[in-house]
Structure formats: C-alpha cells, structure tokens
Amino acid sequence: MTSDLGVWLAAIATLAIYSTLYKDNPVLKLFEHVFVGMGAAWSLVQGFQNFKTRAWVPLTTKGQYIFIIPILLGLLLYSRFNKQYSWLSRIPMSFMVGLGIGLSVRGAAESDLVRQIQAAFAPLNSLDAVILFLGTLGTLLYFVFIRGKGISWIQPVGMVGRWTIMIAFGAAFGNAVQGRISLLISRLQFLFTDWIHLIAK
Amino acid sequence: MVKALGNIDRRLIYLILIVLVLWPLVKPIGLPVSVGPWTRDVYNTVDTLSPGDVVIMSLDYSIGGAPDVHPQAVAMAKHVFEKGGRIIFMAFVDQGVIFIDEIVEWAESTGKVYGQDFCDVGYLAGIETAIAAMASDFYVAFPQDRRGNVTNSIAMLSGYTGIQDTKMILEFATGNPGPMEWIRQVYNLYKIPMMAGLVTVMAPQTEPYYQAGQLFGILAGLRGAAEYEIASGIPGKAAAGMDAQSLGHFVIIGFTILGNIIYAIERSQKAKKTSEVRG
Image (cartoon, rainbow over all chains, first blue to last red; front, top):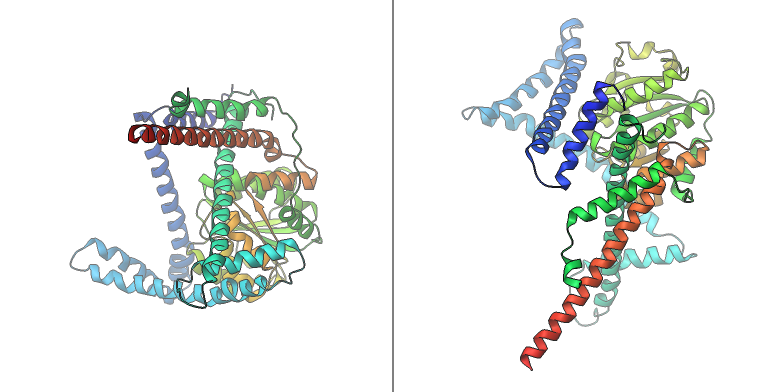
C-alpha cells in the first residue's frame, strides 16, 4: 500500500463516491460537495488568470485602453444581482449571444449542411453506400408529416428512417455503456495499482 | 423463480460487474483487440509527420471524461514526438490544463525540451469564440505561455505565423467545445487536417464529419486509445483495460438479455391470467 497522502485522499474520495452503489449516505454527499466546490474553485482561478493576462496586464502595463470595454461589459454581467440595475446585464448578454450565434452560423452552413449533403451523394458502389443512402433518405422522410393521394409511399419509406433512428439510438446507448465501463476500469486501475499495489504498473 | 430473478437486487449486479471487470485487470486474459478503420486512419496520418512539423494538441476535456480521453492524448503525444513533431498544447476547457501538465511532466522526463519540442499556451476562456480568436491571430489570443514567456519568443515557434502553419490539429473533447466547434471555426476556413479524440458517447454523432472528410479520423474512448497503443506498438494502460472492457460488456449484454426474457415471460403469464379471468 502506498504512503502517498494524495493517493490516499483520492482513494478515499473514490470509495466514498462508489458507496452510492450500496445506498445514499452522508459521506457520499460530503464528497459530492467537495468535488463540486473544487471544480468551481478551479474554474474561478482559471477565469481570473485569463482576465489578468489577457485584459488587466495589457491595460495597466501597456496602456491598451481598448480593454476597458470588455472589462466593463464583464462587470455589467454582475448587475443582475441588483434588482434596480439588473436590466444592464442584458447589454453584455446580448453582445455575447449575438457574437456566438454569428460565429457559429458562419461555419455551420458549410460543415453541417453543404458538406453533409455532399457526403450523402456518394456513388452507390458498395453495400455501405446503399445503406447510408437509404438510411439518410428514410430518416429525412420520417420527418415529413404530409399525407395524401400520390404520396402514400412516404410512410413506408419513413419506416426505414424510423428503424435507422432506432439503430442509431442503440449505437449511442452501446457507446454510453462502453464509456461508463471505461470510467470503472480507470478507477479500479487507480485503486489496485496506485493505492494497494495489487496490479503491477 | 422468474419473479425472484425479476426482483434481483441491483447491488448484486454491481458486485458481479465489479468482480468481472477487476478480475482481468489482476490476471489478464489476452483477448485479441483489432485496430478499426477510424484509428487506423488517425495513426497513418500522424505517421506522415516529418521532423519539425508543428501540431496543435487541444485538450478540451474535463475530469469526468478523462479516463476515456486522456489515454488517447498520451498515446498520440508519444507518437508525434517519436516522429519528431513539435506540439503546441492548448485548452478551451479550464480543466484541460491539468492534463496538459501530466503530459508535459512525462515529456520532460523523457528528455523532451520545453520551447524546442513543445510548448504550453494554456487555457483560453470563451469556448467557440476563443477558438475563432486563436485561429484568427494566434499571438493575440495567446500573448504568453503558461510559464510566463512571451509566445513569439519561444524557439519552436520561430517561423510559425499562425494556424495556417499548423500541420495538423489533434482535438480531444468530452463535450462543448469539441470537434464541431473546431470544424466550424478552423477546418472550414483554413482546411488544416484534423482528428477528434472523444468520449465514446460522442462518437456516433461525430462520425458524419469523418465520412464527409472534415476529420481524418476519430478515436472513440478507451477502446480508441487501446487501438492506437496497439497500432503504435506501445501497449499501455488503455490496452491493459480491454479485457476488463470486454467482460464488462458481456455482463451488461447478459443482464439485458435476461431482463428481456423475464419481461417476456411475465407479460405472457399476465396475459394468460387475464384471459383465464375473462374466460
């Protein structure tokens, strides 16, 4: 067994969190709060470092007064804690939302639309390509809700889409299970390699 | 019997799962692991690196997803260094710098020199906006590295004008920002080859970008890391966990099938009882 205090603390925290598998208990709650608190503190420190190196230092040492604007906008975000002035927080919020949407729309049209449509036009020269074509067509038609004379074929093709969606959900679930087992493996490797040295490094 | 199995204590299932996952970690079975096309593509592309090529490694993952993603980053950093590539480490998730430190510590222990073989420009807040800012002007987004050096004075960055001088981008993510944000802000505009190392749950939603040629490969979770270790010929922690992963999946599959059989039997018994009462 290790004599490293850090490893002992991490091992105790791991066992405390896994105690939820037996039943809910106060030790679990304590370590959950510690985890959340540490995460928040870490984010605060990293955020402050960003503010210091990218805004405060250039403003105070290099005379880059343009940084007064983002600093002021940032401070206005905190006005929401005061009922009288909370409306001021909408200014930086609208700026952030506008900028975010503008930037993501710029790239989304190409990456999520044009390139995906191009990729769906693959030549039907393999079983993979045929499945991809039918799956894409079926899934798109599954979300076409018009019904009527002459378009009755939409519903059966849409059923292919429904099955495609189900298979995609199944794949996502399988991947989620795989991810959870990976987390367990990682913790067991830590407990039995670094803590009690049952598994050789 | 059916009722007893249907009401099986969940703690018993957890115990069986933990025992069966732990057993191959202590006593490896050696089940074969194949290298899939996603990983093969990543490996083959990274293998084309020439000495001196600059690669961005963006560690955009949190502690919760690190067991899935961090082994991938470690395996790929080893491969890039082996090819003589130079790495710029960065993060757009605040916890990413924890993992940069781990890789940097390992790199220095193997004789790699800070400033010549790699550098660490740290975390930049702002998610997608920050990625766009970095792509638009690297030196404005990262005026200093994490050791306080002025970025454009770092030896390995002499002649590096910005994102357009990057040979490839290795993006590791557990959520937002992830490959979608990088594709939107960097790949679309600069066409820098890019791969994504992901938590397994993100892999299916990212695959369309691989099929559309926007990513040259994907590493999916611990399995992806294990495949990469095997392709590199340096089996590590991830490969060691694959027996446990397989047995864990057998347990889940077994209980899923058992649960469905019990459900079907109970439903048919219920239907039988209802028809007896009516009839």
